Image 1: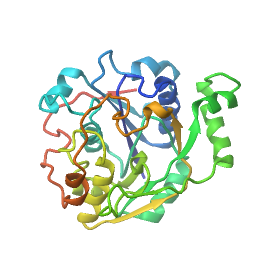
Image 2: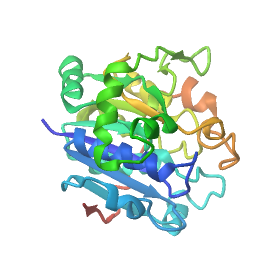
Image 3: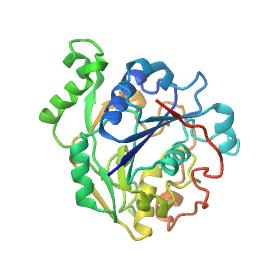
Image 4: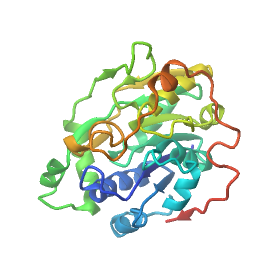
Length: 292
């Protein structure tokens, strides 16, 4: 069985220590998944991956796609209010090109579960269920303290091993609106797992939602509208490396990175089956993929 993961980000040090957090996250993804897509969207100073490459434990399963500012503007119809790191479009680019039997959409600051535990989840959900798993919070300063005050990227897995034993589940349910029976948990987009046929049937994330917020809930509602089951779990452990109060607020709204939100009514209440075109993920465009 082959498992793919899709991670998107932008080289803007969002939340602070982004390179360091991303190194832990991508190393864990390389370790846990057969194929990892990293899509760097709209970075003005070049892809973040090139800044952290020397600290990654590469083994030939990391696929790198760069969407530079000019292309990002074109792909969002030159909308000046589009999300600076347009997650729905970037994620779909990776999901559409992923070759795994199962695909995980996840985030740049998530230390992934161990592979054997992901396989157990897959055995439980089969190919008719869309699954989200709740994250557990860790502080970057705590990670450094555990590693003796160093980044110690070569021994990142020692922290995951310890956190597996010492962390507790984060049972935080959430509704974005009284009509929302789909979010299930807070920050449901940190780990969304489904068979490739489900992702293809719902055509990935809704590509009209080019602003921040509600797209992760939206994709879960789309799964239900297409006849698939929706579920959440509080284990296996996956760890969100906290980036402080400035980073909270959803998609950089709180700290002014992005100004306009997706419409909640459109994204959750009114969403039925997908409105994406057959060419979702810009499948009609030849996009260069670098393998590391």
